[in-house]
Amino acid sequence: MTTGPTPSGSAPTGRAPTGPTPAEPSLTDLAAAVRARGGEFRAGGTDTTARQRTGLSTGPFTDLAAAGHLRGSTPLRGGGLRIGALTTLAELAADPRVREGWPALAVTAAVPATPQVRAAGTVGGNLLQRNRCWYYRNPHVDCLQKGGSGCPARTGDHHFGVVSGDGPCVTPHPSTLAVALLTYDAEAEVHGESPRPVAELYGDGGGLHTADHLLPPDRILTAVRLPAPLPGERAACHRSISRSRAEWPLVEVTARLVLDGATVTRAAVAAGGVARVPLRLPEVEAALTGREATPAVLAEAAATVLGRCRPLPQTGYKATLFRDTVLEVLERAVGLA
Image 1: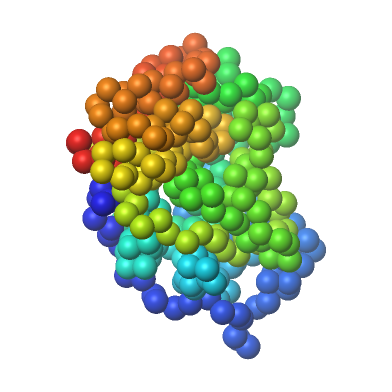
Image 2 (image 1 turned 90 degrees about the vertical axis):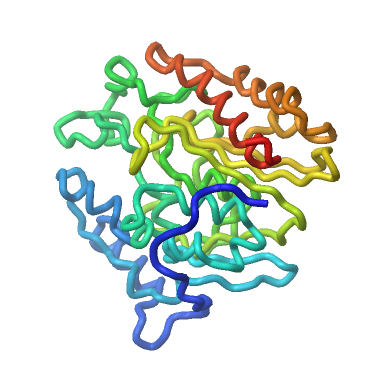
């Protein structure tokens, strides 16, 4: 069973990523271009264009759009699925194969931003986007993210900031897809390197580094790899936001549950908007597994996240919102909401 909005935007291409055609640039050449002239890669452009418009990013930009073999999905041996990094969010959300086998990813891909953004934004771009802190986004303000010596948000207006973690930067990572992919223990493929857990793109769970991700500028994220699906998986996601449409989440949660009757036999839950990096929530999973999914048990499991909360002066509200968002998602997944 899945819950979430009906996917919108462009239809999936149905094309499986294979390799570059003679007309497509090689990834080795694209990486060499960035090493030679600096700047950064650009995929769908929804984030780079915004940063370019404010003068925060000046380029040069090396476009990945011509590498069409990075778009689409391919079945993997053993029942998994490989999704190219240039696949758009709209294509991912509408892909029948993803919706059937990996529903938590499908419903999560359908909720960010607007249909227009989901039709342009890519899997890789969503995972590697930059944070939305207004101090970082202001080209006239110095901060750790730009090589400065401090975090003006920590002593300034940080009411959208973290509620968990002790890192020097207090702005949550904005990737919605990362939250869903964490629940699948998905892997990220980087050109020329061995696959790694998606979580390793972001480093330690406490966010003790200042970067939004740990991929060097000349490395290309080529795909994500999903394990074989779990039969009977129930999935739900929810974003708690400050307005009804096109808003960055204050807290977002994705959950995957497998039930035997009323008993939870498998649980995977992750959250975004609460820490410097997207978080897997093992305490919630442990409180659910092997127990009947009664309202009391779901509430008890959701409340376990309060133990990891260390609010900043302006983010105390996020602790209860975090708990309540987890509970909302669990109730949706088991059919109580």
